Length: 586
Image (cartoon, rainbow, N blue to C red; front, top):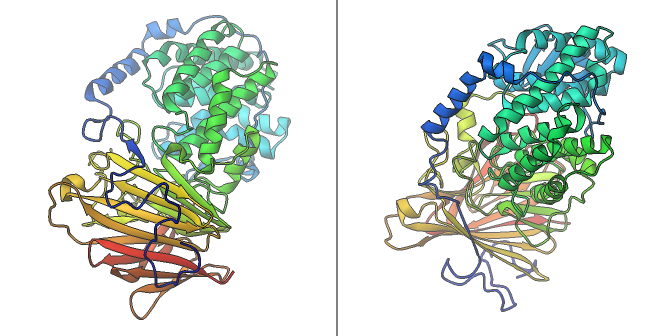
């Protein structure tokens, strides 16, 4: 197979080299088998007993006994002040200086009470974490920043000195501890010794609370964040520094449970990988402030997470839209990669975290080639198995519809973004390849994905199979893809292959959601379309085994705003549809 084939010849030819045979007739021949841990049927998410236990713990934190347990040494100063390795947003900082706290579409006055019921949860978590100090510092020097920040801190201390479920959430508290210490000059410049003592005492009490509660947290990102906050506290707060060995051990074990050897994470979301990188960079900066090398677990996790995240970066520098990974723009990604010091180069022929990446020329193809996350890990997981995104240079050509970002979306739209139909893949009977339960958790569906990959001088072949429709319809979805070495030729075949007892197969279609600003004009024979990128570049799309139409779609960009787009929909006439994307000209 090479670029010399005609546009109408959308069938895939086998590679000229004999090994490996990715186009054997049986879908279970060769390839890696990726299984969904615990199985969708056996994974029920967080149990009622676990919810009740967590509730009882929260009640105990409100007692006088817990307040007594938080007493201890009053620190007089911090042992060091780390430099935040990541930049803030000066535009947001300027608005904070003007007396506003804008976030998640909520433009709150800085005098607002943090517990205002009208504030969205995303705003409250951001405000309570004091992550906005980073933006303030990007727009103001120490005197001006302190004048804006210290009154807010004083009011927070008066209102939330004792346990509050939102303000004292483990991950929010850990982030507040990290930001208060990193921006201590902005919140400890006051000559008021009583206020300064209150801030330092609050930091010590936060650390003691995390130390007493972290063992009750389940494995996951919240536990990692809490352990990171405890590490920072042990490095910077006198009286807590004796707990450094315990804090490092907790963070080591928490990271081992969340970050896999290939840099993948349990919920398979790029947003989680990026948040972990940013968190660990702050921990590493804290070690540097004390003149120490970071714990081995911190350095190793960063080294694994950066290349894995780079696997899903598209041509515009932003991340692909997978499993709730909304709101990630190119600038934020680039800043994290630069600060990490790790070369953000994805493995050439591997699929870290279950994503297959193929590049040719300026073309990038990324495929979701693994089962969806478990219900316990993937509260925002998508039914997206075998969907792909495609970019030509800096332009996104084929996308998935995306995920909510910071801005709130209508509930119906937010739920629809998780469906199979919102992704560029085959949809059978207008149903999801993995069930999305009424409570939002992922249920039964894809339990196994078979992945085959072959590379030659002509290009790269992928042979992918999932079993998401097996239980209901008795078929497996097989997707075969070829990307030429030049990147100007993408060919695919989607087929439904009987497995065991074959049931009647209902209608299916293959959807290709187009990127923002991409136009599509269908051909008169209903077998193709001409796709025009915003800069005028053209791609010709052809289909065989079905009719092609152009329909409306939507894309959620990094800023969280829905943008109307278009999609190509191939209505299959049988069990197999072949299609091709060929770039016209150079």
